[in-house]
Each structure stands twice: as structure tokens, then as C-alpha cells.
Image (tube, rainbow, N blue to C red):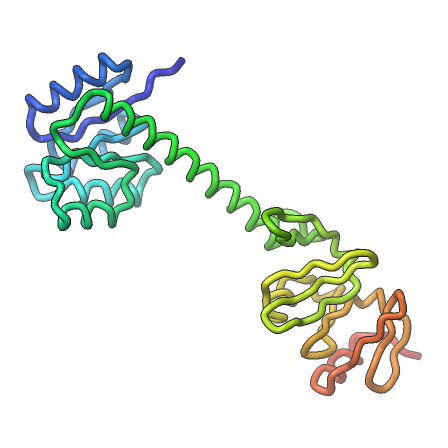
Length: 249
């Protein structure tokens, strides 16, 4: 099993050596020891640690909190704060940088192990969730599948082929996608859903309705009939533009 690589950021050399020995006894690999916040990013770049143990109070111009903030902006790596201070002010400033853990010195070896393992697990789960959310966002935005719309139903995203959608109906803060045998209620505005639908296949014909063009069976003065005998009104504000899109003889 691959050892976990740890970078120690601590300006007290004796304390850093003690932490190094403790980590090694616990089975971790220490890739380096840094005493100044200005050097942390470079050591992360060269040492490739899996996690950083960061003292909040460092000698030099950059504090541990400032160094952690820089890491957040440049890398994806969990940071655990080590500090002799547990006052509200220090804690508030540390929490603002979204650390993966917080340990008050002095600490026991088992506390150090538990904090590191918890921090790594939480960080990896959050990273996985971000990746999944990004993938789902891309799907919903049709970035990778332009003929498919993914709609959220309960806790799942369901694939709905655009060719199956007959019409879209507005319901206050929601819209309903209607297919031949199902309907999907999603939280969106009509503009929001209209922007996601291909304009060559769909048309907004009323403030409360969007229809798929190839599902239209007939049109009269102020209404149309879609497949499955669904009657849809044609709004006055949308009629002129809609009529320019259909072929008539």
C-alpha cells in the first residue's frame, strides 16, 4: 500500500522534528519540512505531498493562513492546521480558508493519525463529488450530448431524448416536460429551459408553452394540435415569429 506523503510547515525546528518522528512511526512518509510561508508553494510543487500540516503562526511575512490560501488558489491539496492557539479569532481566520482539519498543540499521535485520515477521506470525497457535479452539469447543459437533456428527478438525473419531448409547460416556479407517456417536473424558468433546447427543433408559442415543431399536427387562428391530440394556445406576442418558421402553401 502506497504511503501517504506529508509536508510539514512549522517554524520551530524541534517541534517539526518531533512531528516528523511521530508521523514516521505512524507509517507516513514526510516529504519535507518548511519553516516559512513564502516557500510552501514551491515545496508542494517539488515534493508532491498528499497533505500539508500547516502551523498557523510562522516567522516571516506570510502566515500559515495566508500560505494555505495560496495553496487553495493554486493546488488541490488538503491542509490541516497545527496551532498552539484555540481562541475564537484564530479559529475564525483559519476556518475562512476551508481547511481539512485543525489540531491544537500539543496533540497525541492517535489524534494526529485520526485527523490526517479524516482530512484525506473528506477531501477525496468532496473532490469526487465536485467531479460528478461537473459531469452532471455538462450533461444538463448539453455540452457532450446535444440530443439529450438530463433532468433531475428526486436524487437522480434521468436521460430524456429531445426527440421524445412533445411540449413544455410553465407551472409557477417549475416547468413540466411532456413526453408521450411521462412528464418531468423541474425547477426552472421558461427562459432557462428554452435556452437549453435547440432553436431549430423547438419554438415558444405562448408565455406558458414551448412545443417541438415536428409534433405539430394542425394550426388555426389561435391554437394548435400536437400529437396525442394535445391542444396548445398560441400567444399573440409569439404568433408572428412562430408563423415565419413554418412552411405553408
